[in-house]
Length: 236
Image (cartoon, rainbow, N blue to C red; front, side, top):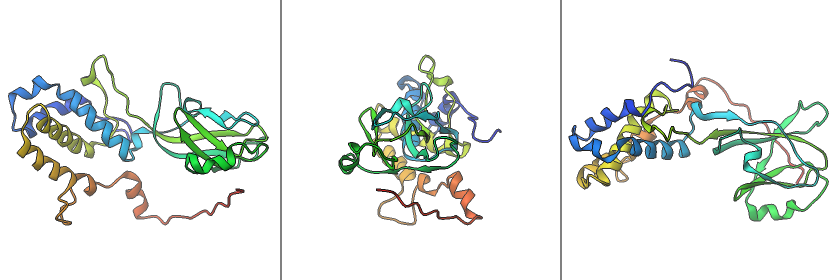
């Protein structure tokens, strides 16, 4: 096993999904690979996975321009699900000192977007674009640290690698089984049981469910290490 690299495919999960559904033979008639894909999309959109974390290209900002397409900050052919940081180098000649710009809402950003000649300190997402403010007074270099959206082999979905750690395979399989039970199988009582297993019982705090019981790699890394808080004072 190589850290942060996929060790399984969607095809590997199909027999387990069928087994969860009491080994019903008709499961294969309802495209279980498609339901596994939906489960992976939901989970990787909501939770952090080292297999999907990456760094975008370093890009030169344009003087007095506040709007950039999302594709400007991500690697070719990718989209992001979570931005961990949108960083800017404050020393254009050497590009050694970088700090993360702070996120703000599109409404709050209006006070900064049209101010020319500054050091960008904040960013927001609006449609297909990312806005930064104030407008750069120099060609600063910026780059994004993000979690990319999970990609699939659409020509042969079952062969798609699963970019999640092995201990999450069980959750993906139960999530796919839940979707099949609640959807085409019309097995509502069993679907309710699966949902409670996955997400927990809202009336019983001692049963948080499989997802909340899992620990992420970052949480495991932090357990035995102290964290340093670095205060950043914005110009605006």
